[in-house]
Amino acid sequence: MYKMIAIDLDGTLFTDELTISPGTVAAVQKAIELGTVVTIATGRMFSSAKLVAQQLGIDAPLITYQGAMIKAVGEADALYERAVSPDIAKKLIHIAREKNIHLQVYQNDILYGAAETDKLIAYANAVQVPYAVEPDLMRLAQKGFTKLLFIDEPDVLDLLQKELQIIFGDSAYIEKSKKNYLEVTHPEANKGTALLFLANHLGIDRSEIIGIGDNHNDFELVKAAGFGIAMGNAVQEVKEIADYTSLTNNDEGVRHAIDAFILEPRKVAAAERGSEDHAQLGRKKL
Image (cartoon, rainbow, N blue to C red):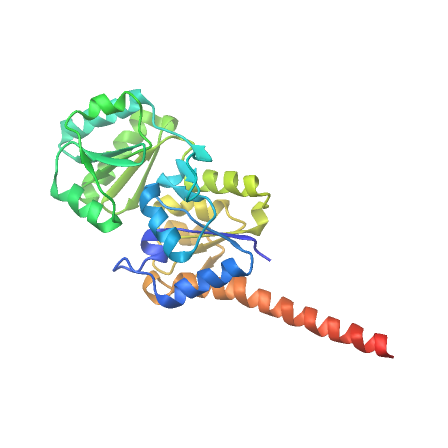
């Protein structure tokens, strides 16, 4: 029996219209009722993931900011937190300015942009969080950032990702979460590392974990889980390392996975226990 399931949001739990089907909501809630630890593993900030957790009735600590922060709803302090250093943060701000690429940053669970651009507004509306405008991002960088996010055309970000990986090497985690999103976090901040940290904290073995994702930033999540599931719409790299490929995010892929690997096995086990109890009762009567 799997005791824990970690689910990505965008492209996984959410449809392309950023909704969660009633059937998927019901499946998640049923899994929780049966004792499964259900958590979210997302690149989104905590305040955005919190809204989804409350909708689904999830009370387990949430993996947010690509794994840079693990925090439970209602708790003041984070269980796990890794920040990008001030030095790297300042260099990234300089690069964004030099290349004229949109960059937004996260600090103390607040989304900041240097100006109120269309990209900042669209992002905030999509994930349902407020934002603050701070023209002097360098001042904020003195305390480091939980995450930095570049938004631009896919080909621009492809080139930028290669350049940043050469500049920073192993001192930063640099990965795409969407075609037009390039995220930078602490090198120990990825979904796989965070997943194993949380599982260990809860006393759950790696073999008892399911991880579900679709994009490049879910690679570590799917690989770290004892049973990794790629969505039908997942990028090829994630499908290649997954143990199973589900349906797409628009076809209730998460619901299908929960039904197949959590709910159905529990029904079978319950039925087998019932048969055994009945047999033992019969033997006692004899």
